[in-house]
Image 1 (tube, one colour):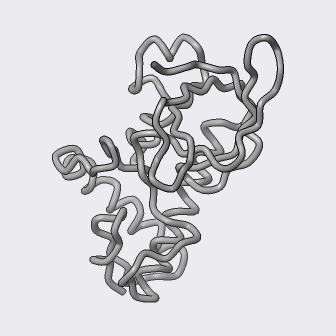
Image 2 (cartoon, helix red, strand yellow; image 1 turned 90 degrees about the vertical axis):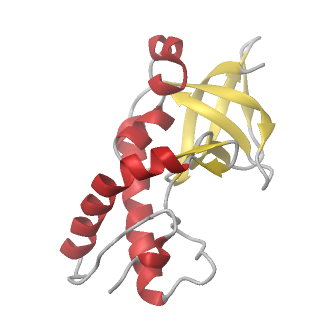
Length: 173
């Protein structure tokens, strides 16, 4: 069972995590102790360097992570949101949620969500039950990687080439 609550985003942590105040019935405010992760998506890291990543790869990963965070901010800025809290939490103990900016979009399920919009706009990759969906990743990678490579190059990394940006271990300087 999933529960849909009207919510107020308090702070974005990165492109797929946030802190929120959730309004429950009877009307009272509930603040989750800790971050809430957007269910079904993954964005590049902003703060925690993945193991085995070179300095150059980490710089590119951070740029992509910050771009994902800013895009999430633009999707949520000044909007009322509803949050569908999932029954399970993820491996780090964070609550999982699907976020909607319009209750009508909730009727569309996942593909009407902010989570899905992050994927469709190529700032996040779709994951299913914690596992990457390889077929869908391949379909989205080429356009997303090209856009992020252009963004990296405009920020002074002239020779950057980004491939597989969830794991930027293939990125080159």
